[in-house]
Image 1: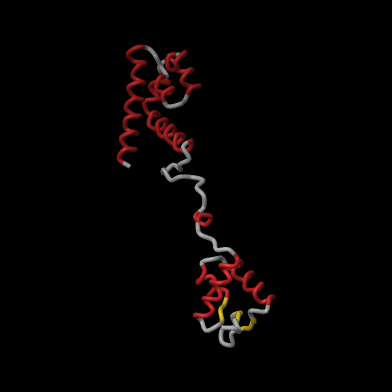
Image 2 (image 1 turned 90 degrees about the vertical axis):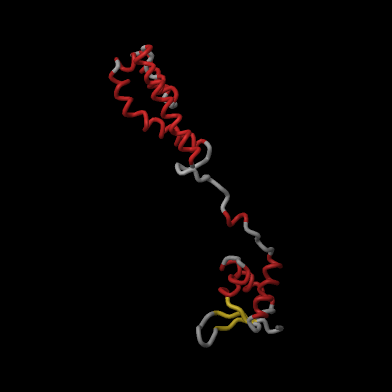
Length: 165
């Protein structure tokens, strides 16, 4: 952060020095070129800093010009105004995803620990996979006959019973 602050101060100082070029050489708008404002830089250059008035007003506007320029640089580099990378792949896509068969094995292991029965929520907790995926695999196992479905008498939660465990 200190490096960024120093770079900001350096750009600000150079902008003021270039702005002073008008007062010493009659060349207005150099600070605008430096901060990426080419169109108004040309206007200032050919009209002697809008006849000096624009050049004097710019002494107050230079900090904003520097901020805008630095923000545009960050955006071009793919960073937010605070320097956080934008458009990064989501963490979810980088997380290990078990195959369907691996997910079935993990669900069976989780059911074994729970006495042969498991709910979708317990399956999500045990595997780290989303609710829809766990429920789809459990329903597929239900269709194949390896699992029976029931409701917990106390909570009413849908429970999948592995009768072979």
